[in-house]
Image (cartoon, rainbow, N blue to C red):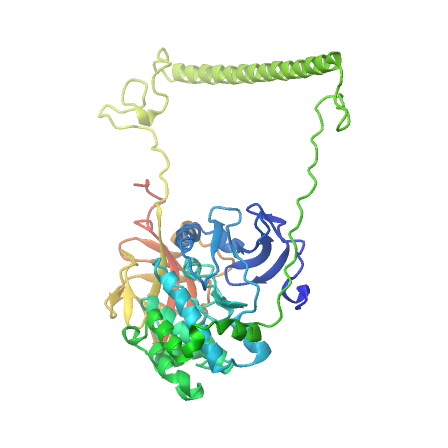
Amino acid sequence: MKHVTEVFQPLEAADPPVVGGYRLVARLGAGGMGRVYLSHTPGGRPVAIKVVRPELADDPDFRRRFGREISAAQRVRGAYTAELIEADAEGVPPWLATLYVPGPSVAEATARRGPLAVPAVLWLMAGMAEALQAIHAEGIVHRDMKPSNVLLAADGPRVIDFGIAVAADVTSYTATGHTLGTPAYMAPEQASGGEVTAATDVFALAQTAAFAALGRPLYGDGQGVGVLYRIVHSAPELALLPEPLRPLFARCLAADPAERATAAEVVEWCRQRLGEDADGGGAPAVWREISGPQVVVPAPVPDPTPVRPQPLTGYRPPPAGELPQTPAERKARRRRTLLITAAGVAGGVLLVSALAWVVMDVKGRVEHRNTADASATGQAASAPSGPTNAADSTGPGSGAGTDGTSSSSPASPRDPRPEPYPVVMLQTKNSVNLENPDAKVKGRTGDIRFGCRSAGCELESDTSVFLQLHGKPGGTLDECRRLLRHEKNHRLPLAGAANGSEICIKDASGDLALFVITTKSTAVPEVGFLLGDMTVWRDAAGTVGRPSP
């Protein structure tokens, strides 16, 4: 049997002992969204608890997306999925619990045993495709199918993390240092920022199966941008794969999503090639061979012994099992309890009375001061129930002029409301306007454009101005307003920008924006792009602020 410590790591001092009522037992690993722990249901069934990273948990947009995605994911029921049991998008921190699958991932099994045989790959593809059928039936696109997200249980594969990647894809923090999804397993449309559909998952399914058959990614290793370039512009090298599998891989890896096989077609194709084994229970023997020794799951952590609260007085209750025996003792105990309760109530009444007296005294002194001030300025102080704020009245004593306008200073205006646009993508073939950053303008007719020249890539505009912030992250409206007041630069080279960089933008109408780069891909200019989080403040450039609508 596999030793416990090979799979489960002990908790560290920074790890929480309990999450959402689940007492944690050990660490299982970590991913882009957070750390994963082992726990158990009240009945003792092992579960995996995924705890969201703090920088994601602090993003309200992430929490909203996370809540929406887990609601859909909880409806997924499939033989080859790891069921999502419970989750809390509003928890501190947010978390989710799925059934624990005792088995290695495709990545781990391949690293340990080498490439899988053709029958095992067929069983793997059939199981993954059946899982996708259940996932897609609930309107979910996985978006991040890869060898580490497919676990090999003793009775077949289990697809995990479905519907969760989308919640983290588009925040200003998640993509910092990461690309959307995993480059080696993306479909061409996903790599180029196009529409992501169920066909995108089929492409990733084939890439995951190719990894299992080859022991390495089909499109090669290396820098993510280089892999993405090959996926977008190169045909897959099907000759590397076992000959019996090539026809299916050719369909699943078609560049055009409309030409790819569906998940149902993948299942049927694999069943036909497996023949009698598909109905004769041949899969368990295959999985026992490749999943390795059985994993020994640690036992649940017992609940700590509860601490009895001490009484508020000097009275000490008798030891457990030695309650008062006589009626007189029980009567005396009740009398003491009533006296303690009465004393607490009386003390509370006195405290409330004292606080009320203080408030009334302060209020009286404030009213006296206001009356004295009004008398000193010749205003009618005989109407204490009238308005005290000059902006709220035009009657006598309100400070209004003869034309009905107030002669006092208006209330300090508030800043305009921020308008968040979580996913703004700029490529050489499109542009955007601050008026509506969600609406991509085809070609370069929009106000804000991304381009790459011989000297490098840059942002440019005919009317808007740019300025990159430096120092600690967390740019604000006031900072952008102050720095852009006299800015005249309509071009911003991106050589010094990176994931997480912040750029202030001001357009000709006075709208201000803060653009936070989440993914910068400029190494290959032909497929370069800039993805980011944008916040826009309307008509905010030339004033201190304006009231919120």
